[in-house]
Image 1 (cartoon, helix red, strand yellow):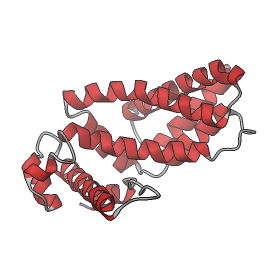
Image 2 (cartoon, one colour):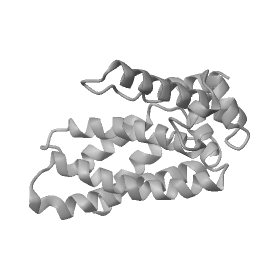
Image 3 (cartoon, one colour):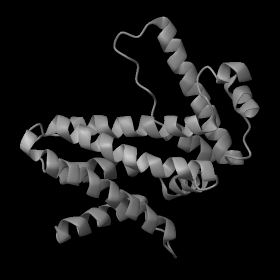
Length: 209
């Protein structure tokens, strides 16, 4: 149970809009509460073992109210990932354009993955691999993130002549992340952190380039 509590503490909260109305704030807080309730249940009982009724009860809402915020359980997984990605890209936007783009992406990605322990990463990985529906969404997620990363890089490094190179940075960075997480998942013996695999992947990438 402690592991589940720690994972909930690391779930990025959705930041309020600058001119958020009381109604919008209530809706945002309810959506966040549903997502956190679902996360606790998913990690405790598994994705398939968690019903929408259980999530609604845990969040203190009706099943009908649930559908006002999420269309299905899959959408809750995407909510977590989108919130985490938004936090990562917000950090990247604060990077100085004097820093090489590949170094900036590496530093931000490593910083974000370091927030999670091996136990937490394993729990989330097991959850994502427990359902064919989640695995399918996961593959589509990587393609989406490559585009978002490219768009973010273009916000920091604005020279039009750099766009082709920034596209390549986005492609190889997402590839490095995928390979690092695969190597982390398949390791034997004493387990190293996912962050260490990610650093190694970027180091090998830079040495080859």
